[in-house]
Image 1 (tube, rainbow, N blue to C red):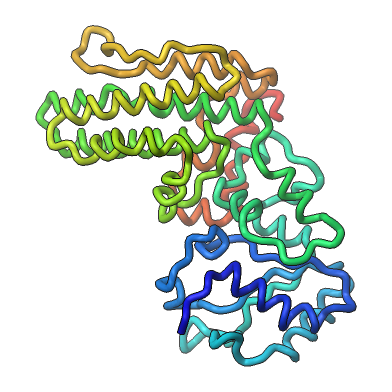
Image 2 (image 1 turned 60 degrees about the vertical axis):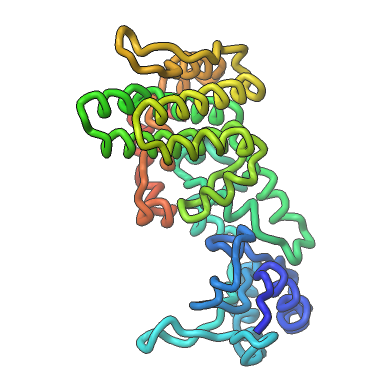
Length: 347
């Protein structure tokens, strides 16, 4: 069977099958949320489980049940050769992939909050980037009232103060482990040096996403999405050398090059004024580093919100949590609000 990217398949599925069934009812339709198909990274490999037509249909609360019933009764068994209903296993029910709901309920489930009521700084910090990406990417198939487009515009990127604080926290994470690549190697721990180098490569990549105002996806697609950033062409060679290096000197040299490139990108796009991008020795030790705390200080100085500026630089949920069982479930991530609410005058 010929592979057809999900965004295209579902555009046809909506136009040919679903829209005629619910045409009298005001609604919006889209493919949003979780998955490589939403991000446009799906391939023929993606079809080996749970694959097929799927949509979100957004209607008024009073019409949810009627629209669900119309879709349940009217769906064909397949569309363009793909099953419309599926089961993940012998013990799972056979279901279709059309989610009929209200926009508010879907947003609250997907993000942990309905952004149409406005977002506080804490709201922004506890929504995983991959959840934000799942709303602003994907495709709208119908949006007559413009509500979905308005939500996507609201969520397109962080407010400036939140962005600057996240940049400060990203630089802090880089700064905290810069000298460890050399110190571990100095005591004969080459494996440890490589592990730290890998962590620093990941932090450089994630900082590049922030600097280019682009939400980062979950780990499976981090490299794919990074390769599409304008800065990737410059950064990738040094990051690859850092990962491939067999000895510390080569590893450090590659990372130092990457730090300098990232620092210059910061100076080109961040509203902090110029920060010296030159690398230097770590105190009297023979380890070359950026001393990224200078970029932390510059970001914090540019923030106008005193609550954010004085917040301990723990970062957003994406920056301090690395558990799929947190980041894939926004309601769980929202429980981490307490980390920020303990700061007096929380925003």
